[in-house]
Length: 374
Image (cartoon, rainbow, N blue to C red; front, side):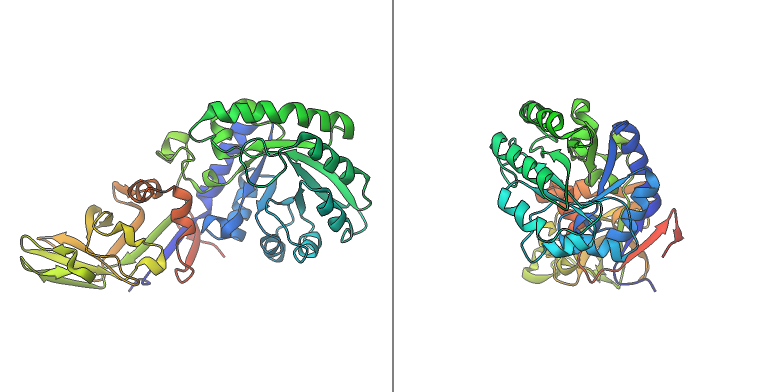
């Protein structure tokens, strides 16, 4: 009998996706973003596969994520993209990670934790339109860069920005690039050619060649999901994750009988219902109620009734498969497939949220083209 729920992750697909992205970005370096537990795929196995596929840097959002990669044996250059509190600074420094700065006070606090040797790398962030982290003032950002360059134990490693609309409005992304480049080139002229310039996410890497610069930071695409929210196959990408379960129960349903909380499905004709033991605690969002297909026996069958915490119900039709049959909620079975992009369209969200939302009680099983890996 299969597990009640299992997320199978093909690290071979991650490696091949990274090879596609590294090839597209060259001669720029590929930084694989493995934050949020590798977008739900498992950070350490995803990072190993990304490096195998051609990534030379890794990126995370938090100091704790950086420490976890180091504990997992990853020694590649590592960048913490997120804001760091004073309590998190020593964790990032101890992990040998580069960090992002945009205020002079942060530089002083970081320098207090700096260790002898090559020093902690710092990437100064100019906010060119994202409106989140970074300073909008190029002169302030230049002062931060100078403070980093002058601080013992610190090293000015990069100048960066982040695009807000590379997936749907390349015109605004080009405006951001036009704001970034004069400032970044001035920083490089003042502080040396070793300052690495980077701005591109997955969408910009594939769709905005002039923004690749010295390094690209790819997240969603390394997992085989489409940064343009259409179909990963159009970009030569392979989805790495499939979410599987099984038919825990199969029973007849007569006209007028219902399934699920609130009786949001009432049969109009005789059919068979299957209960699949996954629910919103596992990442199958309640908003997919009566609005989702799963794969059973190589064919699509509709999810019917309310998604509950631990179970969903599907309409198997007049000729049901047996109890115990495999169910694919995300992934491929036979000639059919259900993509994270499909769920995202139905939910009015993005594919990122689909895999990140798969709950922690769903085990991740990593394999390489069907062969188990540890």
